[in-house]
Amino acid sequence: MKRRLALVVDAVACDGHGVCAELFPERVTLDRWGFPLLDGAGIAPAHLEHAERAVVACPRLALHLKELERKP
Image (tube, rainbow, N blue to C red; front, side):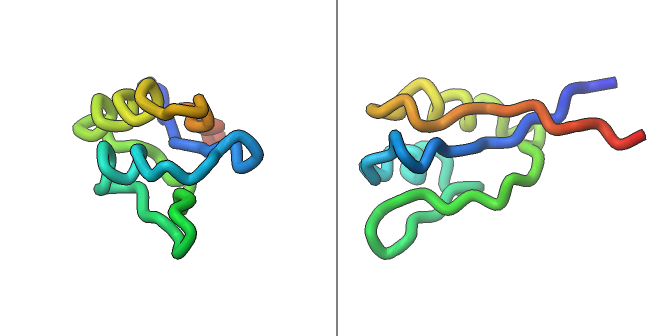
């Protein structure tokens, strides 16, 4: 079974640079102050490379990929 990953943000660490939305606009939108809004849904395999790029490029290291729990 393949792992399902979701993008999550550490709201305390995030400074609202918006780099994540530039690199991964398919899944990241910004609120009116420039902070990311994420839905917590799984990342499609076709978008995983974009999500990983956003995580690595985050200037505050506030983005992470988290494995979603498997449903029994």
